[in-house]
Image (cartoon, rainbow, N blue to C red; front, side, top):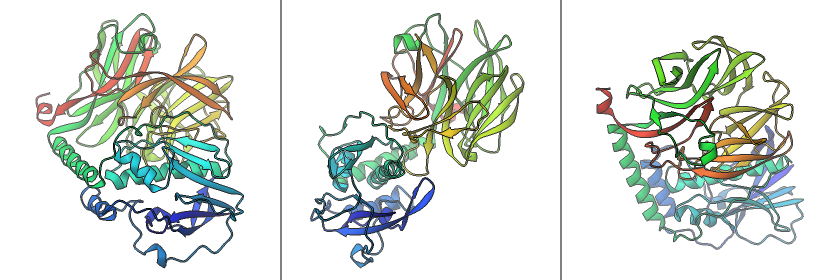
Length: 494
């Protein structure tokens, strides 16, 4: 198979300079055909991208950078393509007989200007991959922008998720088309120069903040409650939320409570700001709240977080996030709560955040935010399934099943309400960890998946944290987490 990228000759970008793309982990030949779009790009765009590279990215390259060689000097496409992916807004050549002609659209607009218009309006666009012959939308998604530095970084993020969707279509995986509304069409776009200068100002302000404060500083909230709590109210109202005290220079996040053999503990990520590395710690609870000291229960050479706990076969297991080791590992509880041993590797060679299993219709399913090293890390949901917790685990037929910053990344354990399976999700529409969604699972099998987000929960007066990204429960004990401002000077007195 030969894939042809049709690109704007006046806007050659680094991401276009390729000879292959990976389809199901195999390289497939790519050629680039340059088209005259006759659409002028914003004045000074390349100069602004260079400014961002120097100031925002400290000289690091970006896929949105201009190619060093002019596109007009690059060799032309010579082979007959099987598939054309048209990144321009030029009409399709009626004489093209490629078996598939795809065109990405950004908030309904083809070409780079569609993506730029949405970004300059203050948001990343909904990406659609369209069959240009009949107008059928083959896939749709919306990226998250964590780490996207300025206008060029945002454009590179959009391109990265465009490639994610394209690779799934070209691999022939069944696509599960989500309904996503365009978000920025009603806003007046900023001028590119104003956007870039604002991004630089924000970066400077953040650097000053980081000099003075630990960031982000997460904290765990808890309460005892007799009804279904957040799941019933779809907000944080009800009994008062209390905080698990932290030492100030360390923060606590990703709480998972469990009652095991008559004792209740909350396990959580324990991050030392000074080392920049997380371990798994735990604290015991009784009817009055936390009792005793926080104890460290699991440490590895790499960062650990999200200590998901699951009972299976009469044993207690933990699946902490270990993307720093590029795998998903299963730990067995040898002596509760403080002794755990690595027992198996469920997935290897993958970046898979917040792995969360559930059992449904006789199978285990493992949900997580997958990341291929490009773009944001909270917008892409992949699922694996197995007949046993130990595996072997097989990929869902439609992986990645969803690209949506508002409902992809897991936020805690699945629950069953009135016979229906639900899961909490991270809503990263306004940034990482800014809100929770409560999603009902409508379909789940090795070949199908559909969820509907019924409620979105924002931090509010009932919870003093500025963010919200985990929800869990064990018996009467309900836990969440969020972040607060933690001045570094205050940590000296904590």
